[in-house]
Image 1: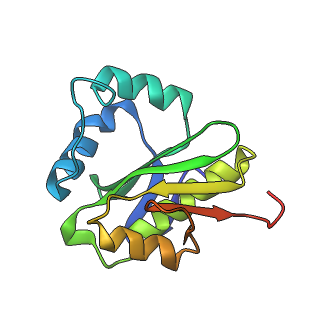
Image 2: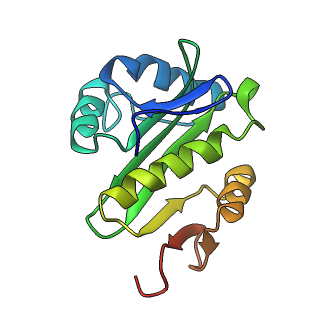
Image 3: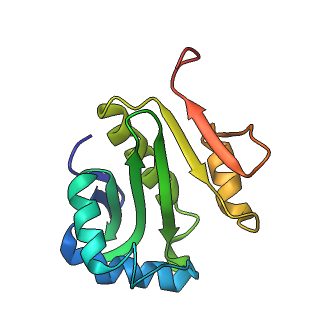
Length: 151
């Protein structure tokens, strides 16, 4: 994956430690819960960012972070986590760009199965992932996408 992908004025790029407050602001603006004292503290975020370098991505408009996705993997399956786009920037394809960029980074790491867990009431995210080829083939709202039938 390149360091940045552009669409109009929005650029997708790897997150940096100094993006932490802006990322939290996006999560707060969309009502996404987070554990600022625990696994999503600034210190934990910094460690995770190092471990999953290139998989934590932000969408930037000018100098403003307007969207975020956190990718991770277990060497076998990739996870699309914490996808959020500020309400004023929705319906512009930014979430799709973030997911596609995260998939590309996971694929570059040798990961060919992508998954996302979606809260039951989040119909917009469920619809987005379905449009992107993910399938709800587990009794929970669990989505995965295979890059090839044999993976």
